[in-house]
Image (cartoon, rainbow, N blue to C red; front, side):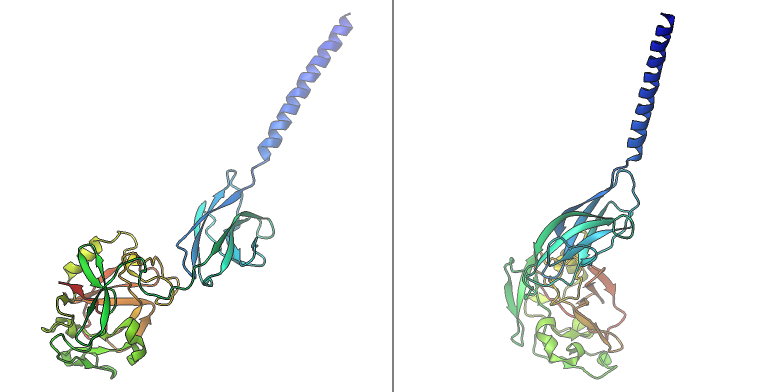
Length: 339
């Protein structure tokens, strides 16, 4: 009888030990079984005929090592890293925005985010989204805005746009004389745009082909002359006019809301361009004080009356900024504002 009880006790102890061991092994196995990271293709923004931003989000609760992350895309479904275009983003961030440029207008593309977990073939993809780019932007203007018009003494007609309580020209000035009929000299000779302290204008690279879209470039003496270069009832803006304009713009991307969209008027990536104000700024370039032309489709600068000018660029410099002018022989564009 005693031996039977001892055997029963032994089996109980053994069963308890086995149960504890199995429990330990179960939790140990599950502890080492980490959750593989995943990625989501969240959404897209800022779609143009040639670019889009794809947003991705990484879920990596057990901090797996990630070699690369970004977006794969192409013109057929299920784009992969091995056969389609890709972007590579900072792996230290769990969210990212990939800007994809040089797309074709009116074309269907397939996008999906990805994670590369070993630098080779261990790849995780997010869901696929399909986007058709719009037709190429053919107008510098915002087609959802209502524009007015004004003409200069040469008979040029300009679109105008109201922004807040101001009315601005929505095109660069193209006039060749002051409003009283006095001629402004066209100056093409190198090292002479200063023009001995006299008013002067030129075409970009001295070529009339730039006139209709980008307007003329003027030296500062056109702005400081006692004669008005703008149409009757209009004037070259002052620093106060500029500040009023800026007060009606968002604090972030103030330049972008003034710029025409697409790549007909600006180089890629034309950062932040929405033209939601209708101001329709184009990359008209500049003639510097050494008579070098540069910046077509890359930057634009507008004279102010107060010995300064303001401008914006196609990339990075998406805020409108004021620059002091120590270069009266520099050639900049003019946008008139209504009195």
